[in-house]
Image (tube, rainbow, N blue to C red; front, side, top):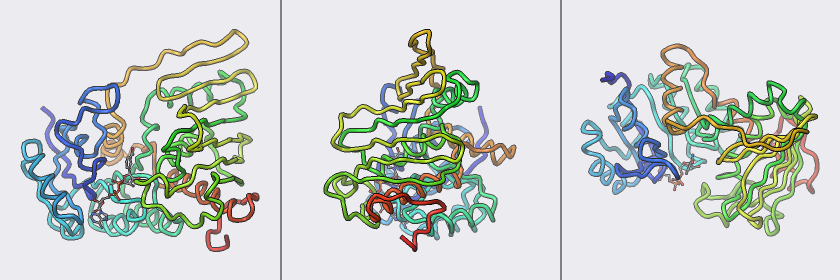
Length: 351
Ligand SMILES: NC(=O)c1ccc[n+]([C@@H]2O[C@H](COP(=O)([O-])OP(=O)(O)OC[C@H]3O[C@@H](n4cnc5c(N)ncnc54)[C@H](O)[C@@H]3O)[C@@H](O)[C@H]2O)c1
């Protein structure tokens, strides 16, 4: 039996934070593939959840009751600062709305925590993202942002295939992203993050056009993505410094197909959540994928623990998450400026 080594806390007790003990697990998998932060801590024997917090007392009470068997030590709070000083966690999950990550992360970074698992997108402004990064780095907190596809093994395999030259030199990444939740912040952040991961480069500039009806959309005015009507879809272009160009086709009006087409000088790869296909002059073939044995969220937490114990790097650190936010805001800025080119680094205050 693994000894419990890490005390953990969660702030934000809606579905993705709190889950429930009977959670069926990620789509197509069993309970050993938990999606929520709480279920992930329950799955990892080296962690013990000791505190949870939400502004809403009823969510706190419901959580403590529902999870009493799995987390007998857990205490509920409505004030996260009080929770942090009483519970002294080693690892903290921040699962509040997008625009409420920053203050919590900045405060928590100075309380002696060692690791943090924060929801995406990192924040809704670069100013907030930068103060989070400063606090995290100054205090040496091992931090992953929950851009989930980074922990799906076959996306990592595709990055390796590109590095190995299986399609020659990568030139273009084309994202297909449709359906009612093809919105820029809440869900698009996952897609832009994966584009950045696969492109493996800094960004020089972007331009974009938001979906019809959002022509005057600035600044981000959503509620964190609960209501997709408050966020636009978007068609965007990303010019990476290493020569890769990406087309972000994310519109609520398109069919709900989602996947990434990577085109190189000698072939192409299609990757989506179901798998990978490689096309070369020998034809198209499905590439066998490593079976998944652990969920994204559990992998992310395990990685944080490895970072704490061994100094190992995490795959979704703050500066990567910031890159995605800068692109999203760059898309909005382009719309505001007549769909023009926006050079990076983005100066939000000048837009
Ligand atoms: N990775 C994923 O697949 C995934 C899926 C869903 C949501 N998310 C992310 O999870 C986060 C939460 O999403 P949501 O839709 O549940 O948000 P939400 O706004 O509906 O709920 C957030 C919860 O946090 C609580 N909260 C806010 N500020 C707080 C504070 N200072 N102290 C304590 N509690 C506070 C609220 O009371 C609320 O219960 C967002 O960042 C979202 O983007 C990620």
